[in-house]
Image (cartoon, rainbow, N blue to C red; front, side, top):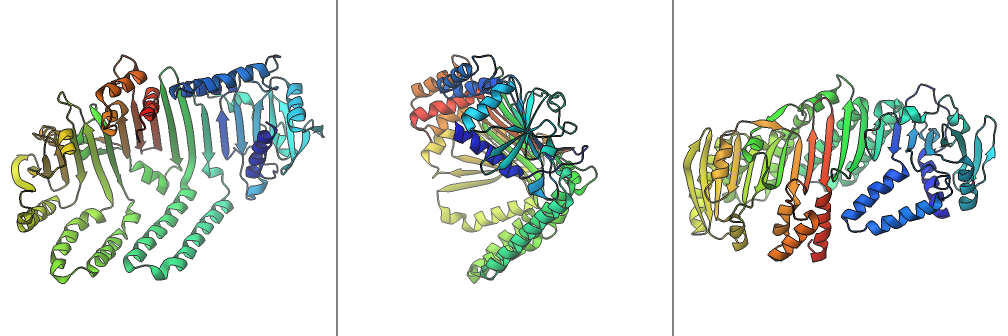
Length: 542
């Protein structure tokens, strides 16, 4: 116990360093909030229960009850109120204040804890604060106020006039188990310049070290990445405003989630780039569909900023030269045509893609459907047709191509029947046929017997799109990843996790990234999904 407490205090002050007073009105650069001990134990017991390990947390709960049996909290610490931490960066990072807020139920009992457990005996100093000597850290200061103990590296940091009051600091209870707020606009300009300078120096030294061993294509790519990474970091440091990270555990809703929000200075380059990610629509996302019956679904739409795209074409051209360098002369014309046809898509610096695995249907079969945005799609279609015409005979009966079997709007529909498809894949999809749809701007495909899902999707209008969205239904995934499981074993796993009810909507993992006024990352995982994953370990499924 003593060693753990000392290690925690040591880590805290190694981060914060020695501290000096800051202007009274300066907002902290960093704010951390953590729920009360009682709340944390409740959350931990819920999570442990999902993994079948609730007994361990119950033992911790019983131990804490014993430690607080005298009615003076847990060794003087109030288990009903939250914890906090603030840090305010100055130009001299190691002299920046860092203050920890610990809720106190009984001051004398807490001081006894320091003495008995840690052999730390604080002594009074001028102004009502206490000074204590801690190994490695040396001096720390404590001030009891507002039913909290504030711990800092300098007595000046604990001036009552500048200390955050619990009423204000914990005013907004959004239900988060823990949260971190970083104010980038509060980081001193000198520190930002130092970080940028060190980053540029690191890249420069790496370039000198590896430059002579790189091919022209590798050099072009690394230079492009290095230049844009430096530019992106500078833009970030100049324009970033706030980053907030929050974690939620909702036992009643059986849900674990997290959220990251990032805002930038109004009117800045970074703000414009983030805004450009919002309000998008995507035809691939519409073709694939909403994924209500999906085992898993993925969609992404984003593009590089114009400034980053500028030199991308040169990188692609250099890569093509490298690819063609050692190709036999008789093969170059074909490969050159392939690269030339794909070049507009690669140089565009844009990504618009979606895919989903749907099912199972009443026959236990699935459908894979995917779509992607391209440039000069008609040229890609013509290229494929010409390649099949020239080289198709070499495939013999292994694959059969049927082009232009149907027209749906701007799309031409084609099929490929692969006779050599592995039996397990044919069983999964109930077919050997791949459906392919091409237009000037998009290519889509599906693996299904009749092409019904793809044909329906091709009639859809562009749907609202996020930067990224991922959805997975674990209950539907189990039979696919556990190929060796018997049907009765699958039923047992599902019943253990979900009882006799349906797992629909209770087993999902969801991740989204959205742009607009701010960049937002959200993730959500149903608790019963965790229980199912834990149960899989019984069958050693990897």
